[in-house]
Length: 459
Image 1 (cartoon, one colour):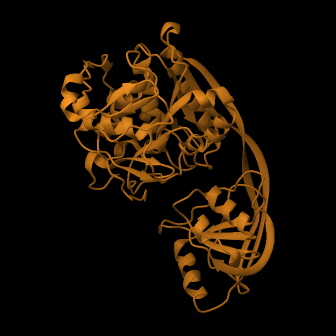
Image 2 (cartoon, rainbow, N blue to C red):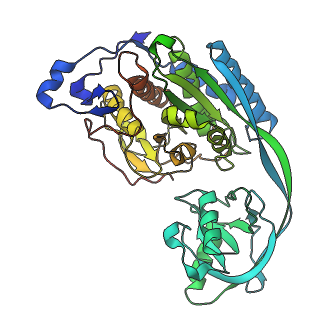
Image 3 (tube, rainbow, N blue to C red):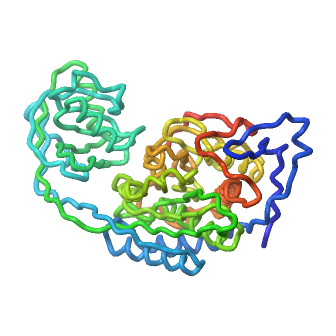
């Protein structure tokens, strides 16, 4: 089944010109309608089958479960005619030999979890509360101290790096939800005693610090074990006669948490990447398309960071936009927000080329306005750090099954899968359409579609 995309200037408010996109006055917009080349409609049944296969077993990075997923994804890309590459990279598992946290000489009444990474060390120092360890939370008071911090808002790696830069000698992080203990990730090449505790235990310490000084003692002994995780890369170059020498990347992560089937997180995103690869396999394009699935996202964006760190300077300059899909299918995510709660997150909370194009496409596809927000915690972040316009597409707030064994295929909405894939397909083609001039990633679209910022949390 096909649909004809009529992307009018009236709806999108856009005129494309070399090196920029700008808006014409409304009286001229109706005269500038044109018919976009035919695009195939995403097939949610096909996407559902992909999720069914991937979620049949956990896909923790570095395990046979991840490798099973990697080979399946590679097989589908090859089936569609893409040049493929499996990109291996080292990751590290850690065996906990001993972990102990004492507060004023008394062992806490639960078992802490060490951060992933070289969290070994023995330290004793006053405990200070440092909020969520954002840069604005860091001051001279943490120097030489053990920091008590709350999970959320920024990545684990950023939290620890901010603390290390501020002179802290250890960290105790408590959960930002009542759902047990969630350990974090240390930056590469950083040795730093770091443990996670429950929200209840953390809030108790926060209250205690208001009236009583606390000395914390941490002892963490961990053995480092190297294994291998993988990225899967599929690329299709345009016809040489219609080549802008530009690249668009579309990604998701294929790994899951250790005990979860990860149907929504993020087999749903992978299903969209594969579906879009299938749809674009025969579509005329003037821009190279790269479809990517990353390993080890759940361990701290390791796969996507490895990928961007191994791009050449030329490739970095060529990539005009990165579209990241993470958790795009849950029936139970998004609350009562429009469009099922679909939102576009950028790292700096600013609009960019990706959000502008996608907002215009969303207006056509859903007849609703899709907002943007500010959040990291997914694989759009390494692209943003290179100056590449990037956004994360997901339904927020997340579902109650997030990072649980209950994240299963029966919770998946085919309607949400199709919706997100269709929006991104249309947005990508606004760049890759050979009938339009090249686009400059350094210039965002002026507001043809007025879409708002929302301070919406993920959880």
